[in-house]
Image 1 (tube, one colour):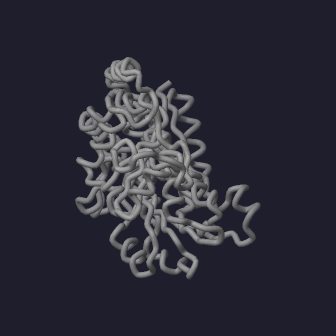
Image 2: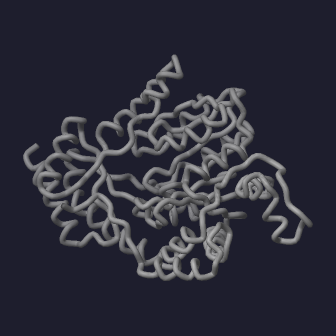
Image 3: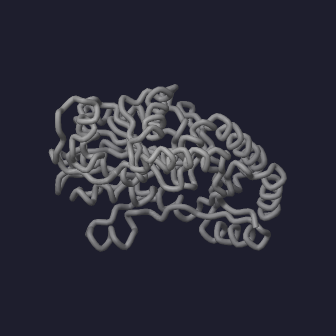
Length: 377
């Protein structure tokens, strides 16, 4: 069976974890944590980068930093992982779900302004598959109405919008290093801060509501409880694992893009014939090869394709279910929006195996299987 995902190890992870253990400094914010954070600040220009135990934690920090209060509204695409909304629900926010674009699963920026009310506090664009949302349009709307923008860049490491790194455009951003991502640490995440007014408080939230970071920098003579917060920072062992991955970022990205391009070339004829739709990369966006997906013509066709691939030794999977149709949302909300594009992607999108060690022969096998499946349809 060709799996959907296989975590890639560079060979240095265990070595760096051993180093971390031998230092005797296993809790967070040690040397490996600092090296990882500096990597992101230097390479992508984030004003401040803080490792977290997950992208969900980074999003929860964003919700706290945004000062979201009960009754405030937060605009989130419905076609996304639950954490994009849940982080703000935990602060008491009302989630206003937005539809996707017809051309790709990202939030439809042209429909955003109609969703804004005097209670709107935050917009959360999710860069699906690592492909940028229309950030100029989103930031223009946010600036017009004095709304914060939190980029959910969980899948978007090393991807760009008009030459600007994703995660560097909104006021705040969150990344994931879950084992299914391009760069991994098992579980793990990153908070990127681009607005200086959030830097000091982000460190306090990160350090369980204390000004401990200021104390260790010698800026205060003692530290104590000064704000809310939680244990958001990961251990040095996680950071050590992540450092081995970051050292190999360019190598990992190069291989993933090779696989992505093989898929894309292999299905062009199906796309031209209108049998499937391939991922669209807008002119303003780059492709970080986080995933490769195809869009089928119906739920039934997708179900049959996934079953066919599994019988032939390939594990392909669908993705999100629309959050506005989830049991939790329907239980807590009377008005259920009509979001046809989100529902279409929920029914028809199928993700193909994508990982560093996927062999060219395996990619060719998958391409041939799918072309054979659609032959004559």
